[in-house]
Image (cartoon, rainbow, N blue to C red; front, side, top):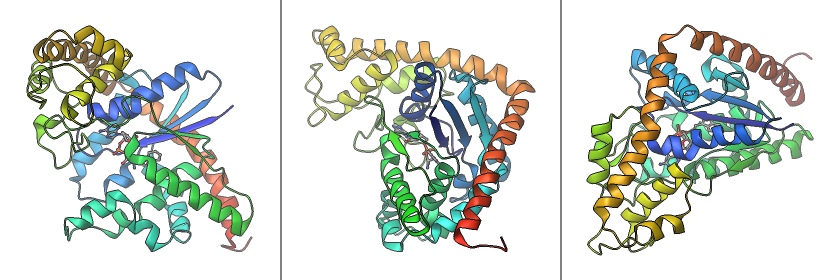
Length: 331
Ligand code: TYM
């Protein structure tokens, strides 16, 4: 039996990138790996590394929890919990900060991007964020961590931190493996295909949220930036915008890139985009319907309470052992 651990930050609305890069993969893994355990959480401590409005953060935390389930995760097989409800994440995060170097944190793209923009509002927690993320994973002895491509660097650092700790204190943390999907790992902005699709900073026309209605989805896909070549072809260098749409199509339908190119090569972008918008609507609208049912029900709180109880048991035990290993406290 393997343990699979992953999390999502409740900042802004979830995007199609979060769905195709992460949640869809969780659901698929859960169907394929019947004997494995799934620990999935809402990373609200990570969210406050940038300023959040408290009541909005609380609402989005529940929204993400409901969306995990609406997208098809099995509540019986998922330990679903809120990161801040398990205080050991922050506690281990601190210990791991003492096992990671400034130089390593400075190399993280997420931090570098902000720093390069001379953003003076970078908090110290944004800088040390990868140590907390490592704690999220190592606390539960994760075997696998399914994430989108943008989190690969954080996973590599997590592995380095675990190995360094094990090397100094003797074997203690399991060194986890990232799981990155073959398609859908990097969904790009619809207006600027050089940038990752993200809810923060980008133009709203550039991203689709999991809450967009049919009209909005169709409009955003129709106005997605392509090129003047006008031929359906998969060329991520010269036809970046189109390649991104083909990737989205492949990820949403589970068709291969070749099958899509062959199917549409003799029609223009217009028909291809109309079909893609329909496929997205067919996937996203039922998810929204389920989300509305779940968010209204009391069951969500029951699931989160149960998740908290299970996660707490693991985290508590691991943390006790960790403190002993490091020499903290009296015994
Ligand atoms: P977050 O909240 O930014 O994103 C959640 C997941 O969605 C994936 N993702 C994408 N995949 C493809 N294309 C995109 N445009 C796209 N945008 C986002 C991300 O790769 C991620 O898998 N630090 C993490 C949350 C986290 C975490 C963890 C994840 C905290 N602790 C422990 C795994 C394990 C983050 O900010 O993800």
